[in-house]
Image (cartoon, rainbow, N blue to C red):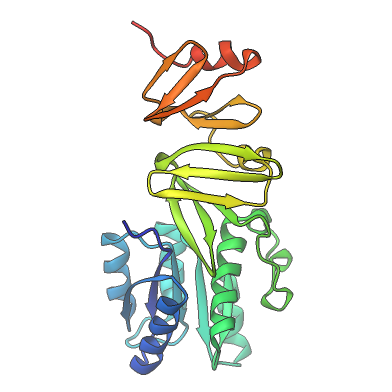
Length: 256
């Protein structure tokens, strides 16, 4: 299963689009496709699971990247990064009004691409994305990325994996386990370890499915396969339920 962050590239210069796609794949991102016009981009958005877009402001045809951004804001609610070599102030002002999550100025290098995408994810989904003041968003020259290694987004987490992020659906998370100041996230496809306390993750997870059962464990109730005494079972794993959490936890199960 490919859990990489999915990127759609909308760029009307073929060589630039292919170069960006190659850079992203080498960095661990997944490139859904490269297209050169607004209509084709919308068609792909309707048919694919896409996490973020890189959009050139100037595109082939009568519609611009700004026109595409307006559609994204209205219908798809996804983060996007504007690619531009333009210095025209009126165009840049129009671009600012559609609230891109970040900008990438041509020509750019690998590091600038990576930072722009991570900043876009952070600005859109992280703490910086919660402000209504566009000027308060993180700008690329600050290089401030999520230090705890994860970003909560609707239905899933982006978990840092080396130099990129992996998208892990909430439904695929089995349980979280504290190990001193670290948290181990156990998923259907492996485990991730982060230098972040368990409580930090607890604050980002939906409380209707994820429940603290012990000072060292949070479980996804959807993936509990059974229970016995003070133990919850997730497959072969036995997870203890602390006495102080017992009544809260077991009343969540429908017992016949």
